[in-house]
Length: 149
Image (cartoon, rainbow, N blue to C red; front, side, top):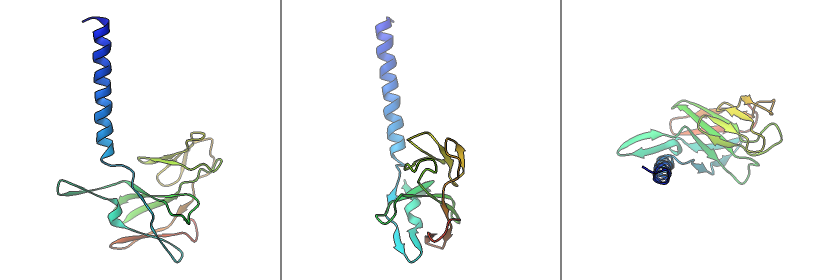
């Protein structure tokens, strides 16, 4: 095989792998929902986490609530059917909106990282994120916006 053929084959393989990975990750795209603004907080259906796959139900690890009333979105992580965390997506370093990626949040401005429970793991941010209590009922979540948890 010539060097040129090797490079062409390697690039083709790389691009194919990238396309397949892209298709697989697109199956579980980030879910944005408005949530329902109620007295003292927001409500969200637990069904917002559900993903139907060939007759089975899987669950997203998080959803993001974007509501015109909120200055920043809130990322809600699901640990199991009764355990959730709600994290305000505002970086404590300089106030940039965070990006959710798997089990962590990252600041695109300066690289600060936070856990899915809002704890800072990588600076320059020094403070944890604001979190909110989440009360799970049989069918929905109530995110209490009155006070941080």
